[in-house]
Image (tube, rainbow, N blue to C red):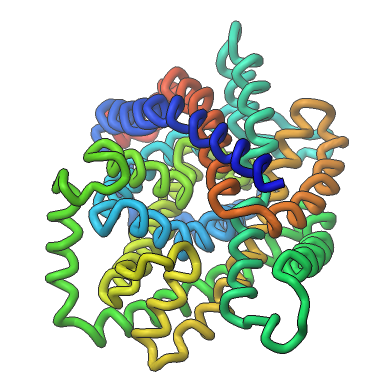
Length: 449
């Protein structure tokens, strides 16, 4: 069994190395191109984006607030809490700089992709909208849009599996609560039990469909984000004298070849891009699947709201996590990685109780992520087969939670990174090719000349 796991891990790492440069070029290069053609103007309309977020239109679909909440439920979670710790552990504090840069570029990418998800979408028989990358690919690109949509959807079936979340939730339970101290059961047996419980909890929500998911996440996510923000801010301000030196360290190590421990300077850049992409999913194509269901009449309205995603989950939440991890010094402990590293950092800086409070937030974030990711797979499977068949993906999804709880963190991170790379390639090609649709709407609304 161990040989099979090592073989799978080696294959995943080899495949990722072959695709990471392509991902770097498509996301960073494509993002800079989109930034250039719109002159970065959407970034100046952050105030309008927040105003639109709380404005409801009387059309079929979900509200913009529900769409963003569902997207944030998928992105604000273990990717921001555990993923950042993994990035710092692998590449040092400087990796945060490349996460920030990727997030800013990601805001532009999400603006374009989510605008397209509304501009180029279909309607179901009951009038509900049906949008996402596979639809703007097939509707907007005549000759090769369909093959791109199929490519994206197949990669999406694996990219949206709950591998990372279920794995880190089970690991958190084992490392913090230490159930073996009380009941003599092996680690694998405990993780299997945890996987079963997570599957049952997820099943109650995801089998209720889109409306059930957005109802739960729109209530859970805002409260948890606010709690995480204020708790993190308290720890940072309590160690205010360390803030400026920490930022100096981050900037210095971002451009210091000797401290780029993840494969040299470019290895550090790619690591930051990969973790930022995993954190906010810009360019991957997940978010447009929710934003494409929005009530928005104008695509650029939805694009502005979607743009808030990377701002909140990477620039805000990831920065808080990164600062806490670095200021605490926990990242220097060799055997700490992932969620365990973040928990130790919170314990050190919050009266020895931070890990317990963070544990509560981790479970809420993790469960909400399990809920929202299922819908991505439903849409991908529905596109590949029939829309009415999409719901059957949920059975596969629920079973995969158990496997994910048992797998190693290296394998699950490898699966996600590989799948996200395979998703972002066709998606970024389509966004760049179809960007004129968004530019025309901006010109029509007199945003740009």
